[in-house]
Image (cartoon, rainbow, N blue to C red; front, side):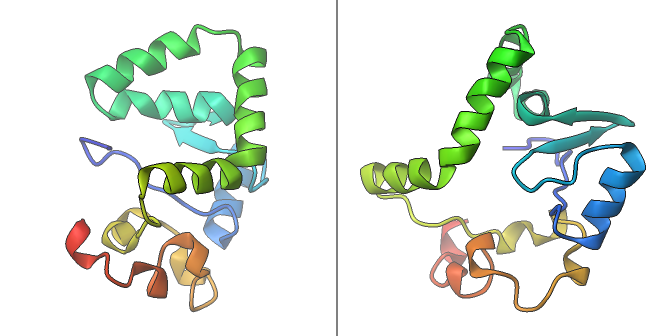
Length: 137
């Protein structure tokens, strides 16, 4: 959880996401996490682990320690997870009983949605995917 409301998300599929990546020399590849932080571009594992600093003290320490691992090892693991994240998430849901994620409550933290086709893809956690999630936030 972003304890200080620091992070904003922008889909790389949006015009704004593509412009930000182009302006900062970041890859426009939906399979790659990109973090723009104070003009610095972080990609892949560095993007995810750098965000850990904003998720509270335990996550900040874990992120710092993980960033000490050489980038080629971290990114190898990141790419393996990225390739199989759908299968991994289905397994986690089956084991834990968790449902799909509903992003409607966080819509104000997502930039660039106004340029996206309506309705947004249900797999993004909006619309019908949120049915019954309103009270669980």
